[in-house]
Amino acid sequence: MAEVITMPRLSDTMTEGKVAKWHKNVGDAVNEGDILAEIETDKAVQDFESELKGTLLYIGTREGESAPVDSVLAIIGNEGEDISGLTGGGSSTDSNVPEEFKTENENTAVETSETVETQSAESAEIPEGVEVITMPRLSDTMTEGKVAKWNKNVGDAVKEGDLLAEIETDKAVQDFESEFDGTLLYQGVAEGEGSPVDSVLAIIGPAGTDVSGILSGGGKGKPAAQKEEASEKEETSTVSPAASSESSDNDLGDRIAISPLARKMAEEKGIDISAVKGSGENGRIVKKDIENYQPSEKSAGSETAAAAPKAAQPAMNFIQGEDSETPNSQVRTIIAKRLSESKFTAPHYYLIIEVNMDKAIQARKEINSLPDTRISFNDMVIKATAMALRKHPQVNSSWKEDRILHHGNINVGVAVAVPDGLVVPVLKNADQMNYTQISAAVKDMAGRAKSRGLKANEMEGSTFSVSNLGMYGIDTFTSIINQPNSAILSVGAIVEKPIVKDGQIVVGNTMKLSLACDHRVVDGATGAEFLQTLRTYLEQPLTLLL
Image: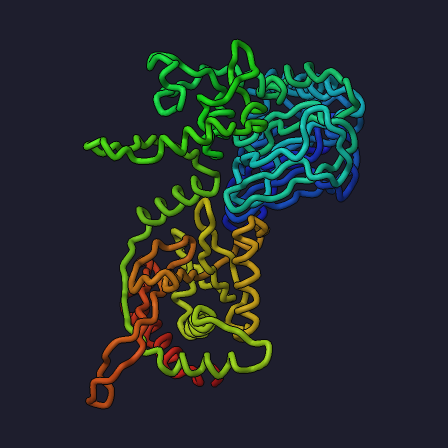
């Protein structure tokens, strides 16, 4: 007998759930313990396992949509079983459906019937041995992914475990491996473009398989081969050939036919496109022309001569600069969105102190004199910060509309600059780590961050953040809070300057620290007390051992 599966309540505060992904389609066999779907709550995405055995006959909440707790999520029963009574048909099996579902199901009976038929039809369109690969959800906050690079082209053989593509999420770039053997038949997302989670990324199957039926049933985009052809046929880019050594043979109104991709490559390599002979249609310069271009001695000599100043020329010639654009990466787009949200939703205020670092400098010198030991001042700041957070738990908290969440663990996020933005790898339980452990962890994660080797879970769960620009010679600065944290510490450079000590003016070493706080969580006095404790730890390093 068919059983109705309802949207589960997966947390105390959950009122509705969103189906992030279905792991089973209508008509699939389901065993007890199988993952039926991934349910996104107000806190996380969780796997939802089936407690029944049978066939998935009906899906009540589509992928990417939300539904209230206890509403119909799915129906499981025997293959071919009539479930019209459970979906509004009015048979005696209505007794199996909770009363609150009946009105809604009666109103949506026709739509439900069409949905089941459509899902079955779409499933039937996929030929045997063909697998549709969708854009994976590589982090809890990921809503779309960008293909940074395809490692396989349409027509290439693919084996299980091969790197199919590099996917850029809102946190990092991660390698995406194939789980299937076959031939890459279709690319649904062009390199450098983005697509929503669960949209068609690629299709793998036997060589020569016609996948047009799959694409017409919901696939998006065009095969990669068509996309490359389209990019070559985009409107012609134009440049003035006046800077060429052969400008006397050209009229200023002439235009050079070149594909956008070839033009970009030429700009990156510093190639004068007026000196390149195109092999494309009507002499158009294409990608291979730039790749194979070798400057002749004549053109190289002409360029050198053109660059030399003319003694008899009284006026100065200026090289005309060209504007350029760089498409926003997924990382930078998310940074912009989240920092804007933080700045405009959290009432920031700032506290600044100056710390005497003389004893910290001496302590670091003694520590680094030990064999195989090398720590930085940043490592010392992180350690002192983690210990201060243990004494001031209010700073290690998060705002939650109706409550304040006090974190039990102290997880310090360390801001790391990368070519396309900023990432914040997290040191879990930093208060329990010693200097050498902190140093090793920071060096490892910072190195992998710059090479895009960090995993998503290494950038999640921070309870406080530290940003250090001291190595760039910045004395003082303020940062935007990395929510859901309630504070962030900005660390400046150590500066040698005159200070007053025991009534005498002497040379000392000081460092300025700026604490940005969310006033909803951290009051001014609380932030000030935290900084006092932090100053004590840095000015008296031995106190960290107590």
